Amino acid sequence: MKSNYPLDRLLKEYNYDVLDLEKEEGLKSSSLYNLKSRNVSVTNYKLELIIALASLLNLTLDDVFQKLCLYEAEYELEKLIGEEAFSTMIEGSTENE
Image (cartoon, one colour):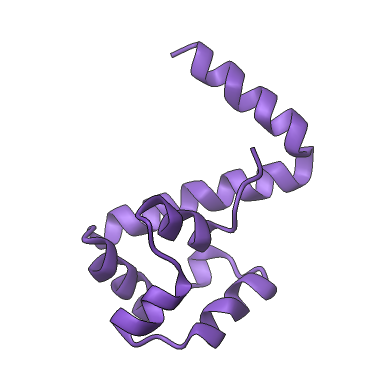
C-alpha cells in the first residue's frame, strides 16, 4: 500500500487531481506541485488551498484539514518504517475492528 502525498491522496479519493484545482478553483498547478517537491507539511498549507479544496470537494474546512493531517501522518510513518511494515500495521489494525 504505497501512500500518496496527502494532497494527491485527498484529491484521488474524490476522483480529482491537481489540475482540477487549477481549472475549477484558479490555483496555480506549479505552486501545488511545489508543495510535493518541497515536502511541505499540511500545517503550512495556505488557507487559500484549504478553502479551494473544501469548495472543490464540497467538504468543511475542518474535514479537509483533518483528512490532510491524517494522510500526512500515514505518509510520514510509511517513510519512516517502510512500506511493508506500514502495510502490515494497517492490515492488523483493520482486522481488530
